Length: 408
Image (cartoon, rainbow, N blue to C red; front, side, top):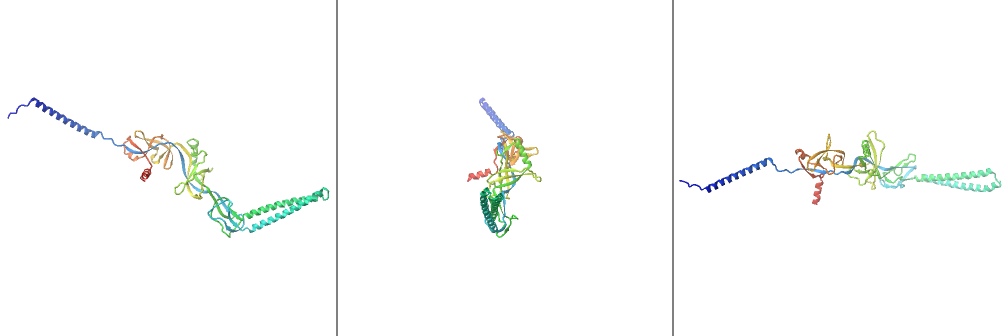
């Protein structure tokens, strides 16, 4: 069957439709190709790795040393017998605090009391003889003026008077000595302090000749602590002070001392350094130092082992970093500094010492720089030069304690 010929308008419409379809298919193909290329070449940006940092803040830091020491009483008095006799009674409580001059023991006083009475009697006889010789001299004076007696007789009378004066003086001294010896029968404490146990009991015979020890009194307020420090450290510190690297801990040059007890607690009252010995121990190379510690409650006892925290100097413009922030290598101590673009830079620093789980840095860092403390393992997995995100670092336990406190 013969088809009728298409009109020119219909043919044009069909050609335009075909062209539009081809163009649409081309656009879809191009879009798919571009999307596939984006998947291969342009990955979406990944978040930066977080690292914990602390900000370098220069401050004046006291340089502390912890040294072993042992406590010692500031005054020690051995109570000894100064009179011979039998101990009648003890007048103190063992382990109590006593005052200077307080009676501690009573020794049998009978023999000393008799000696005192004898000395007083001799003195009274000397006084009587003195009065008699004085009267005779006064009677002889007018007789000598009229030559009623010889000059020899008057001289003899004057000599007897002077001898009587000497006898009185000797009698007074004998009475004083007897009173002193009688006073020794009551044994008294020579100092104020804490007394230990009695070393003699009632009925014991003590002797002045043997100087029998009867008790021991120790003054423990204030109390001394003796400790040692390496001579090399002392000389290095003095050199640094003279060169101006450090300054003294206090203007009056009395270093503050803090005691650390066996249970790791700090004694609440601080003391002061008294002196450093002039000699170095030849066997240990140590110098002995002594400090004075207030002990009003008597909590510190002689012989107790303690650790002495001593601040002898201060470092100016030093920076304290957590110990994990510093990497100790054969080439020196280094830290990782995060710049403003998040790039890590290795920085060499000068370490003075470790203190309270921190390194004291004297050189190598500027104020405001961010030093990496946490995240070293994560950074090792990154390509060199990869930016990181610096976040403030807190010591372990602080964040947890703050969270629990907020819950309460």
